[in-house]
Length: 496
Ligand SMILES: [Zn+2]
Ligand SMILES: [Zn+2]
Ligand SMILES: [Zn+2]
Ligand SMILES: [Zn+2]
Ligand SMILES: [Zn+2]
Ligand SMILES: [Zn+2]
Ligand SMILES: [Zn+2]
Image 1 (cartoon, helix red, strand yellow):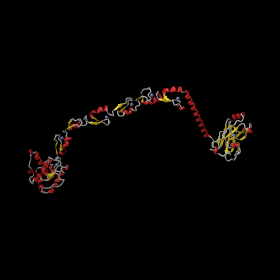
Image 2 (cartoon, rainbow, N blue to C red):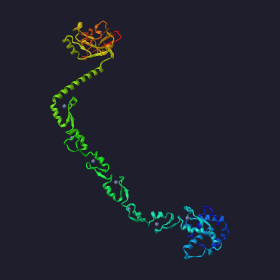
Image 3 (tube, rainbow, N blue to C red):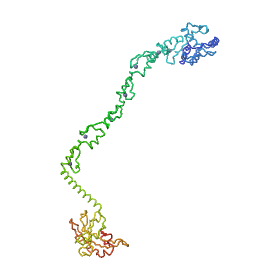
Image 4 (tube, helix red, strand yellow):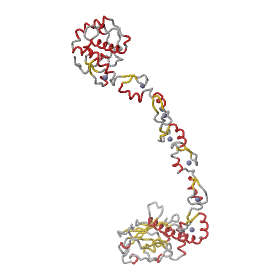
């Protein structure tokens, strides 16, 4: 008894029931000659069987080499075909094996060790060839007719599955509506069963029985469109409450509980600002200090009965404002004060001022105050147009005064800077001509001690600075204007 030659040697010979027998006896005779030399050679036998294996494993696909020079394996397959044919087609029986293949002992071939034709599908069966048919009747990989007569050939191992899930003739129930169907009927029913829960087509996220979808979409779906009752715009049902909380047309009661009735949200602000009779408003004299606050309709009565109080509030306010104006003025004048140590004093309306001085004894004209430096002495020039002391009626007198200044406490006293007065000729061709007088303060002179805050401080200077005669003989006055320069020099050197 030969052992199975190799794992790759399937029982190809078994796959023979569609073999065409179009060859005459001459073919088989040829066959026989080769058989004689090969059949007893185990190694040779295995190789030939391997070559047959390449023709295929399925009983329905296999075709057999039908060339005149057939092989041993060809004979094997034919032999097996006949062994099956004899069991199923006894009525059409043809020649016996012995009649066709007289020669080597068929019992020996039927005793060859083979694998199951479903070896590649995983069947591990291996035994004598004569037992193969019996095995195939039970082999779980072998196909059999579906008992439901759906026409399918199904491997036994898959039959349960087929009967349960894929057989078109199976009886089955729809898992949703429980109605009974054939397999094919269920496939048709699938996708249209009214009891099947499916996701809402409007994508609201809910699962709805298919049969109730229309109702859901019109009544319950969060994504159905709904119209705002106030502004008539459309919103999905789930966003409508959010809109309702902001809809500018939604009517609201006045938060001040006035009698106006419901007011559209968008108009409420204007109502409160301009119309609401209940909203507390401030008295129009609030800035002056009135603290009244009450409903709009009471304001008028308040104004009428508090006229006197409002008036005194306004007076107090205006005096506060007056003080503020003074403070601002002094701040502005401080900003414009001259800290250079040189004053150029422009005296306008000269003739009118001269006339006034002639009619009024001791009329003194004073310049804007100026400082000798940023933190220096505060000075002021003064002028008597009609003269003073020895110059009275004939000369113009000029003087300098030391005024109480911001930084006196830190300065050296007595004041000792030299002072130069210059009266300019105007429009002169040869530069600035004019009259100039200077002096260096004498430390013993009282006028140059630290000044007190007494207003009538005396000045020091030149009572006969320039005669009226000279004043008019040269161009000191032009456009009714005179320029006097007062220059302070800390170096004490008198410069003209
Ligand atoms: Zn098997
Ligand atoms: Zn079936
Ligand atoms: Zn159903
Ligand atoms: Zn929905
Ligand atoms: Zn709306
Ligand atoms: Zn109101
Ligand atoms: Zn008031």
